[in-house]
Amino acid sequence: MDLILQALPVFLLTFCRISAFFVVAPVFSSRNVPNSFKIGLSFFIAVIVYLSYGVSQTVPFDMQYILFVIREVLVGLVLGYTATLFFAVVNTAAGFIDMQIGFGIANVIDPLSGQSAPIMGGFKYAVAVLLFLTMNGHHHMLNAIFTSYEWVPLSNSLFNHIYEGSISTFLLTTFTNTFVLAFQLAAPIVVALFLTDVGLGFLARTAPQFNVFVIGIPLKIIVGLAILLIVIPGLAYLFQQLFATMFSSMDELLKIIQRSGAAT
Picture 1 (spheres, one colour):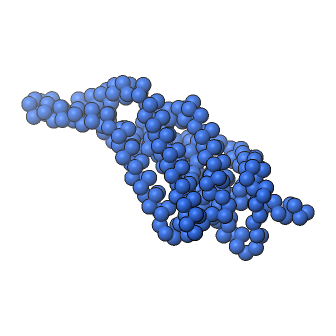
Picture 2 (cartoon, one colour):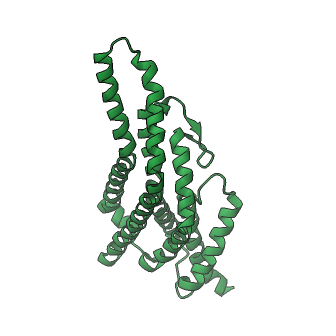
Picture 3 (cartoon, rainbow, N blue to C red):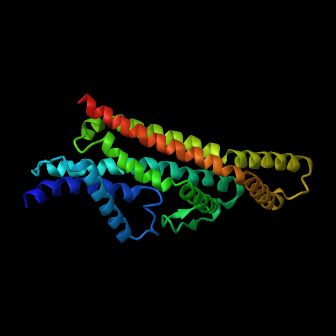
């Protein structure tokens, strides 16, 4: 009984961080993944993490334990949210493309998130998920949550770091970087469609008898789909660089929290 009372608080803290991570982590947080699978996966990973890192640790089970639970949940949420920001790059880039190509007036329901998404967003997000699984990105995600206990142990100082503002600064900088990445990802098609609009403008000035609105809509769709067909082979390289940036940002977040714990 004493052994259970000593191990249970540490295991529950481990389970809180891992389950919070899977709530917001890309691919794992999809609505297509059953909740029972998420809970079971979190439980078994928590057991492995406890046997690897938590056997020799002790946590006082007193009134401060509630704060420990909140702290571990925040660590998992921030780590998973950082990864989710980079997956949002795909939908943001698709939104830029749909706005230029004319598909922005018709959104579809994304079965993975259950929210309204651009037409190109569903296509590009499906390609991103397939490439993510092909590149063993889910293994890297599991490795990230394992590694977090080496960099950010249960006795971390996350609250002090949040009070200093470093976490919010990091999230704001990451959000800015993801927005730039989204624009870069959509740049080829957006620039091609912009040049198409310029050409249609010259056509309207030189030949007013042409109905530019009737010609422009199908022309922009044809040009947009043609450019998309050309850039599809390069999506693998672009998404690989995107995922590499995502994992480096997650490592940077863990380093920030680790420096916080070392400083305090």
